[in-house]
Length: 324
Image (cartoon, rainbow, N blue to C red; front, side):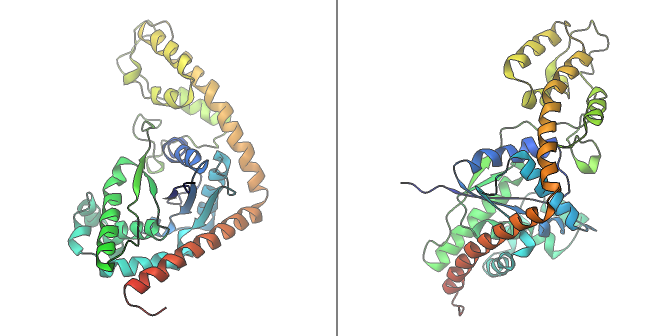
């Protein structure tokens, strides 16, 4: 019988999550945890590569609570914190000894970021990502299109290490790409905390309603009687991930024929969104009421992850001729 594929993925701790996080990442995790060996981690070291970034325990555990509220099951998936794993740092160091500098400098986007925040941490960011993945010999890695080049570097590093070690130590991880559309925020731009245009997973109903009703719509639809085009409307991507397909089709047709107004269309969105948020809030409340239980779940996950990473490190050290 074929063993489940091992999946590794992490998120930088930014506190409570928003709808973009859920539909862009967490839904993929939920699907993968059903059949595969999944390790999901808080990428707090990666967060520190941003200039003047400061982390607190609240940001870490607020995010973990949202994972649990979304349905991530610690009985199926291993949850842990990156900075609690010195094995990641050791593998990062060992991989760096066999990594050409030019490989890191050619990663798309490095030069722009390095000019803004010049540091060794920024240069080594993709190498640390590779260590996060290879420490567990991951088969699959959920990534967005903007991270595809980083995963390809990880694959190149695995090939190079295997070649120099003259044995297959690391499998070549495959990308799992999300098919979710990029959700626009309240201003029609990409939903992002830094832009202040988000709807939180656990946003209270009154606030969610106010935010949705104020969202811009098709800019070419000036009057109620004007036909609209859902493809031009920033609200439509939210319908695509929230509203049942049959209702989406009816709303799209009604919009194009001016049989439904923008406010009515937003109310239809809220009919699906508000109950979903209510479920997330209810689940979160049970975890917020028992913080020690949440910490314990992370402790258990960290110990399991450490056992796997240590096994990998023993093999890597052996390949490099280091003593046990």
